[in-house]
Length: 356
Image (cartoon, rainbow, N blue to C red; front, side, top):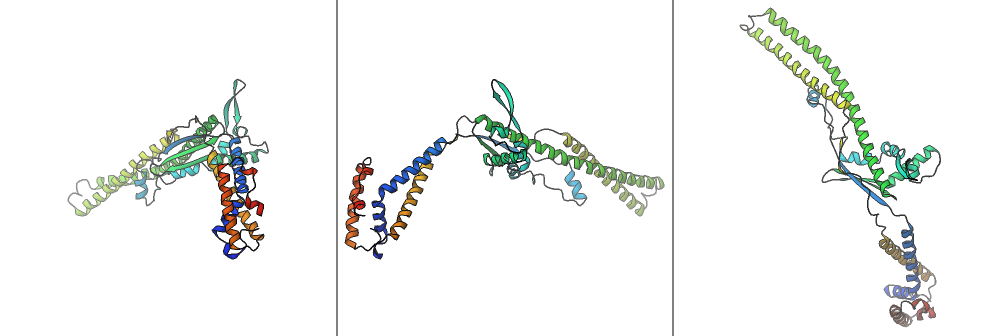
């Protein structure tokens, strides 16, 4: 007989009757779901997370290159633009880094000797075609590797989770190495392009400087003592001197930039500063056994009540208010009895169940 037999029975009273009548089923199903979830979590392999952090160093532009670009009407890019902390955080998850990481091998001790084992084998990726295996390894790494930027300090934090503490550390360290290699290649290639540009401009400015010097020399040879007494000749002398000074300034700045670019092109020092090195974690990650079991209990509880509510609506029949009140009182008494004796509660049948 349904708890919702009449329209005026709908509401909290009907819901209370439904829950109390089927309380053992509801609690029993929820407990089974929580136990199964707990067993599933307990049987899941423990994972370890290795954490490292670093700060980015802005690549120095060759000295005076910005001023030269401004004099030539060229807007030079900001050195911090493409190399911001957010750029490095996204770079960790790029195909450029993850593909190189997936193709890496790591030293492991097996049988008393050190052997080099490919990362797909360490991650237990199925042996399929090389391309598919590389793609599967990359997808797995996207799940294991996380990165974030500490907004207050600009520090980039890289975390790697694995079922082995030492493997997590080695993967994390390899990521830092790949980031540094990428930056070195990128910086050297940009420095090479700047060296070619400044070398070309240096040759052009050297030629312009020689022309300006020849003009001033020719003027002085033709007007050794006369230009000091002539306003027009004095003005011409100042103009020619100013041209030589400007070309000299440009030549000096370009020469300095050219030498700086040559140094940057072959420079192989790290361009990221390690704040926290990658280390092997001493303790595994918490499984969250209690939280996940409690969540499973609540979800199963809610779904069971919802299912019984729908079923009860389809099996509804007419009842008067006295029957509803009497059943509610009886169910309350049985529920209190179950709370006093929870072990034997599932072996008894409630009055509400016998009347159904």
